[in-house]
Image (cartoon, rainbow, N blue to C red):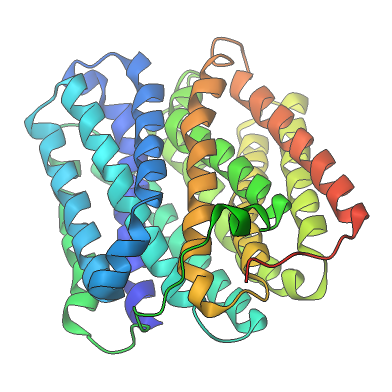
Length: 374
């Protein structure tokens, strides 16, 4: 478990910095800020496309080499951004970056989920999400430390990605067997948990909008760059803090009901932003939003993998990432229509999370036994 988590943590620091850097650096490279939503959406479109291609690559070259390859591909997409500041090339670069990140996520998630009991899977995934969000929090704070001007931020990100490659490069033990993976048929995919798929889609909608548009929405509220960095870090820190809690709760209660409760937590968080525009209140509200948004995906993916044979885990994580990617690609486009309004992005999150909470509550009341893909 050490190799994928160590590499992922450093990758997360680089990724967290990059996600905030791209929308905030557009003006410095004479690219219109209206392209921020398109850059976010095309990245998640790449995530969607990549999620369809990963399983055969892992089966052929193994988890370790696949991890190294996808990190290297991501680094190459970062290197071209400051060198060629043209919107068309940035869009293409972010598309390829999304495909590379899809590979990183499927490799790490399946590496941690293959084998062991459902309890151990939940524990491992909770540890994975904590590392991911902890690293991303540090990355957000780098906005205030290294800034968003010039080449230096991109060099910092490239150095971090190089460091992330080192654990899988030098430690060759511990990867799971890459043979024996089973591909899920469409009929088997249709039998996967519907709340799990909806949870992944909602997570994608919210997360894609947070990463793609939240920095701009906060900047439009006359907040300083440092304050934007702190608020983005608060979102991700909230997501990190909730991980040990949901890993324990997912063992002792219905995961569908837990998805409903996490969605309602996000609704409550957005309600706080309507009560006051105070900065401390905003920090608290966004931390709660982070708890809600970042909890949905790990709960959903463990729900999908419950009692699933280990030979189907890579395929199942691929389906869940595909569902997440659909939401991530559509989320920033849908949220963009709310951006012109004051508190518009918060309205968007309120509507999406409330609708999800209602669906999950009804789904949890049905209490139908899950039909397994295996």
